[in-house]
Length: 180
Image (cartoon, helix red, strand yellow):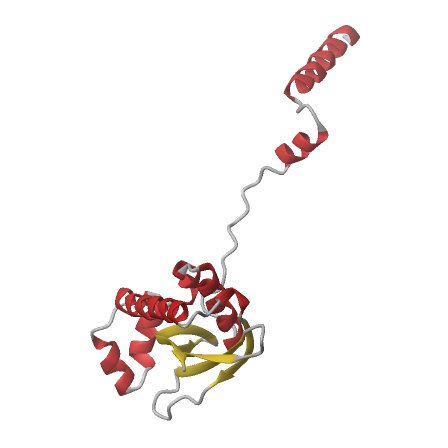
């Protein structure tokens, strides 16, 4: 009986050694090979400054797609169509998420081109101040934001951004313009 038990234990240990990884790092990695849920990032910006920082970064990288989490999705558009003012509802009547994105992308491209024609070095700019404008009395969701950018010589320039605030998050809405 002892011989059989010893034989079984020896075979089990040998089997585990064959299956064991070559080093401790691989052992830990194999041990922790559990699929974790993908972290879901909140859509929209928590505050105007977060949105301003992300817009400047997208401009500096010349990648509009970096702004995708700040663009309206169908859920937000439906919410605006339900809760917005009559003017907002009328504006959104013939609008779609793709239409709004396309218009913002056009404004973004004009902004980049304006920077080139005015010899703006976007990589030298930093967000100095972000001011939340007053929303219209009849349209509380519409929140204009003015972003003051400074270059290395402390010369200011302003971006004016139309946003909507839904569920305490800021989303790009109609335009991004460089104010002269």
